[in-house]
Length: 309
Image (cartoon, rainbow, N blue to C red; front, side):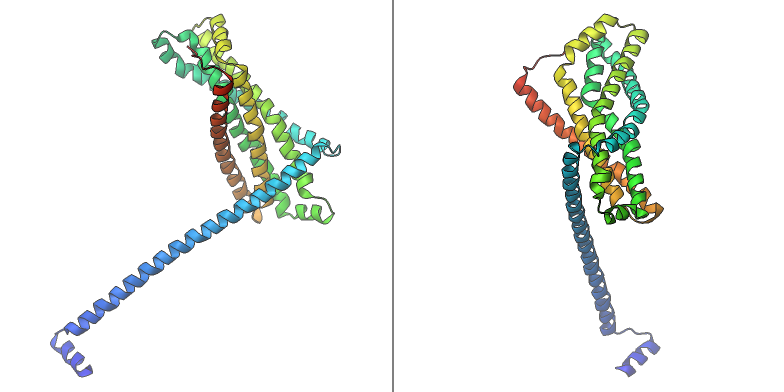
C-alpha cells in the first residue's frame, strides 16, 4: 500500500480509494461538529431554563419575606420613623418630576387630538379624551415609569452598595432581620405614596390639556370641564389610583431584590440598577394590562355601558 501511494504521488494519479477515505473523514467531522452544535444549543437552553426557574424561586421567596415583614411592620411603632424617612426621599422629592411629566402628557394629548376631533365637529369634547386617557392609563403608567427610573435606581444602588460593602451581613450578624429593617420601610413608602404622586400627575395632565385647549385652540372653558365631568367617572379615578398601589409595591420589591442580590464591585451595582429598571418597566406594563382586563370586566357588571360622545 505504501509503495502504491508513493507510485501514485510520483505519477500524479490519485487513487479512488484514498479519495473516498478523505471524503468519509470530512463527512464524519461535519456530522460531529453538527452534533456538538446541537448539544451546545440544548445545554444553553437547559442552563437558561434552570437559571430562570432558580431566579424566579428566589424572587418569590424574597417577596414572601418582604410581604410578611411589611404587614408586621405596620403594627410596629419603631418601623414608622424609617417609613417616614423613605417617604421623604421617595415621595416628596419626586413631586416636581411627576408634575412636569403629567403637564407635558396633557399638553401633548391636546395637540395630537384636537385636529381629529375638530374635523368631526367634536372639538369641545377634547376634555373627555385628555382626562380619561390621563386618569385611567397615562398618568398611572408614566408616573410609575418615572418612579422606577428615579426611585428604583436609587433603591437598587443604595442596597447594592450595602451588599457589596457587607453592611447587610453586619446587620444580620447583630440579630436584626435586614428585610424587616431595610426592605419593609421602602416597600411601604412606595406603596403608600405612588397613588399620591399619580394624583399630582393627573391634576397636572388635566390642567396642561386645559391650557392648550382653551388658550391655544380657543375651546370654551365651561365645555371643557363639562364634558370632562361627563366622561370621567369616579370609577376611572379609583382604577388609576388602585394601579398605583400595585405599581409602587412592584417597583420597590424588584429594586430591593436586585440590590440585595447584586454582583460584587461597582460594575455589579450598575448592572443591578439597569436590570431593576428593565424588570420594573416590564412588570408595570404587565400589571397595567391585567388591571385593564379586570377593571373592564368589573365595570361591565356594575355600570351600564354608555357612549362618551
